[in-house]
Image (cartoon, rainbow, N blue to C red; front, side, top):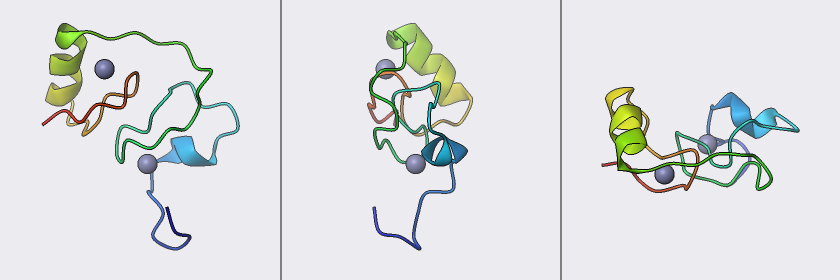
Amino acid sequence: MKYGVRCPNMNHSRLNAPVKYCPMCGDSVNRSANGSCDHVRHAELRKNRHLFCHDCGKKLR
Ligand SMILES: [Zn+2]
Ligand SMILES: [Zn+2]
């Protein structure tokens, strides 16, 4: 992603983000983060207005 049009999600500026993918743009932020997901989790995230799953990077809508 180009500098200046960066995603505002704070996970990008973290050295050790707790999630694998940014929930706003789906970019990988920390490959070594722990996390698992399934369709129940995805439904939950979707309800919380997340655009992407932060565990698998899948688009939620
Ligand atoms: Zn992002
Ligand atoms: Zn997922």
